[in-house]
Amino acid sequence: MLRLLAAQLLWLTLVPSACVAEMVVQACFSPQGKCSTHILREIDQAKKELLVAVYAFTNDDLASALVQAKKRGVAVQVVIDRDFDTRTENSKGKYFEAHKIPLRRLSGTKSNSSEREAGLMHQKFAVIDRKTVFTGSYNWTHSAENTNDENLLLFRNAGPLAEDYRQAFLRLWERKP
Figure 1 (cartoon, rainbow, N blue to C red):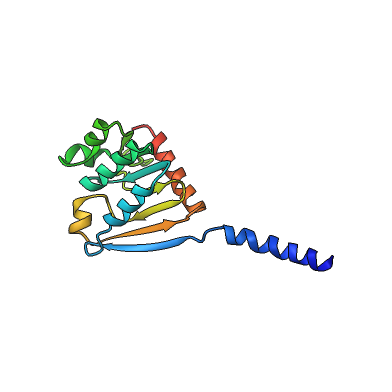
Figure 2: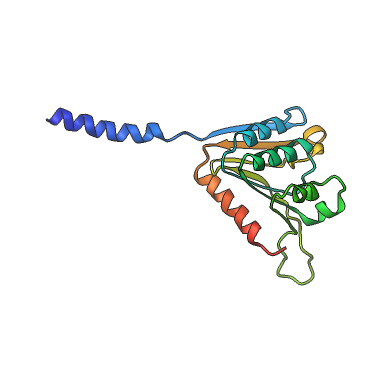
């Protein structure tokens, strides 16, 4: 009886830890790393929710992948910087609107000082299915992919980290433009 109890106790302590997936972190550096391939792979695997907040978005392939995800039934939302989107001809804001992807164009948070203007919405992250996070200096642009020295971190099985980023996205989403 004592052996059975000990075996059950051991099983209860080992099984839950075996069921929890360990977070995986991967880094990519552009232009040599072609970081968009990592992003495209994760977008293609999205099942429920795709939240993207990036200062600048001009990459055709990434924009198209978001549209395809929406067509598959994934809830897609995008936040981009207002000034960049309005002054840059190839920014994807109008493209997302044409494809009925919910979009917010934001400026940065205003300072308490009345002498300073609003800053930039300078975030660069995405949350996929509440478990995968992309973040780093990498904007979703042709320049980030092909010209600039940029970095992109991918966190899979990110759990609480993904939730922190998701909450940050929702705060941006709820902010008045």
